Image 1 (cartoon, rainbow, N blue to C red):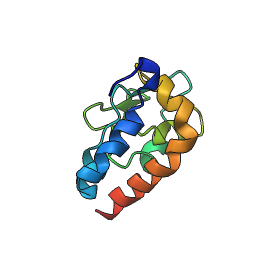
Image 2 (image 1 turned 90 degrees about the vertical axis):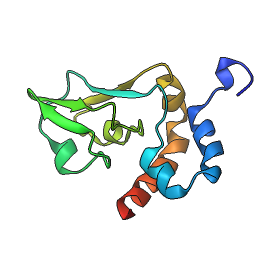
Image 3 (image 1 turned 180 degrees about the horizontal axis):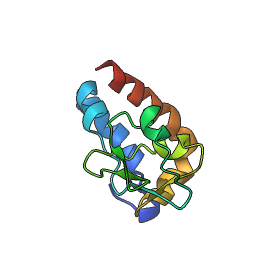
Image 4 (image 1 turned 60 degrees about the vertical axis):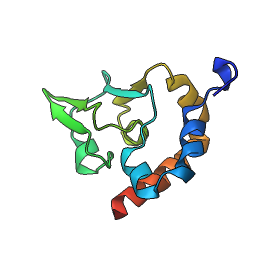
Length: 120
């Protein structure tokens, strides 16, 4: 995409490409580039993220009393970050600031995609 780095939006890139990709594949394999999730000091290792299925692609495990995110499975939707009642998960990465600033617009799209994923 042309323009300055301030114009770059991974969400815009994904949404632009989605009409050319079958919906089932987009929901299953779409990944927001540069977004990673990790447990922070607030993580209690309680396992609610697993029990309540915060992650629809099952990228969360509890290891040594902390949530561990499998980057190979994680799609970067940040659903787990938003749903943890203890604020025990956080996102990081070069595009995290972009997603954080547009989260209120992205949430309905991501949640719809995740609901569609459940139906597959």
